[in-house]
Length: 394
Image 1: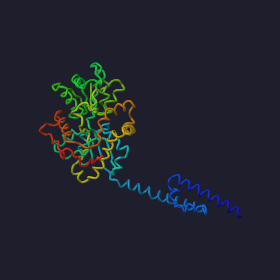
Image 2: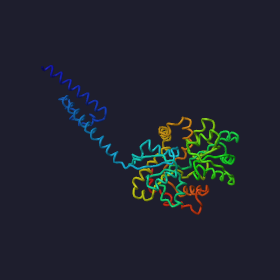
Image 3: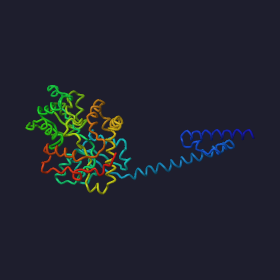
Image 4: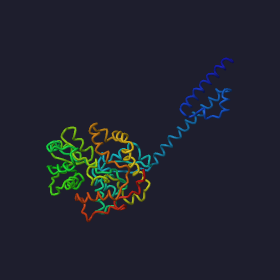
């Protein structure tokens, strides 16, 4: 009987020590954290003590597990939820896609439902009409909206340069002997040699950019011929020789290159045109009354997107990998993704704050391209078209 009791005691001691070791390895309980007198006394009745410690530790873990998970879920459910429309799903909104992938919105204390809209005007009209909380779209569209009296303003900038890529039929580029490394002046003059140009709609940025760049080339009297096609149809129209050129943000122009039919001649996201660089292109827009009533939500959304853009500067490889993993990036051929990324990476701002000088460039583009008349153009001062009140600091 005594022998059996000793064997049972040894088994209990071994089990207790094994359990104790596992807990110690996991960092839940460390021997070094126990007082030295207690350690010295363990040898007297180690089996029972180890068993008690193990039971207590396991019970504590179960309690934490059972109580912690529902609490975490409850906290997640308590996050305010808002809606955001983006003009179109492209890499101009890379800061948003990175923020979405890395859950920056949730980290800032808000849940955002993001939905692509058919166009920038639909997006902005939804904000003005209160059917969505936020609109991510082009700044010149906001200039036009404010000139027409619409209550909207920008609280964050996703870009520091216009991100449109101007793509031409490869045959035209080869005939002119041009590449992306050719002087910008020569590339701009190529736009005066075009036949039919594709655009998404009358007055859209995809149309106005050609008028602006041709004027920039000193050929403002050149008559440009446009045909209006939906953005998804533009690549096929160019590759089938229906149009000679179009301009959209990556990857919508870059997808034509693998076929050998298209060539991005002027990637504006690289900052080669000073008038369109240090320029808040895609911006986060809201109604002024909404942002005044919901300042914490506005700041959370603006900060999350700013963090997404900042990652392109602080950890570019992580930003690239995150964008690649996004539902938009995974659909692309690797060569198209790499080309598209290279076209927009420089356009990502270190933070989402804006300046009067940058907005003056937006106003200059809007008036120069004929989007608004100079007499109608709003002021570039903070508080009219834009504010940094909600964007915070890095």
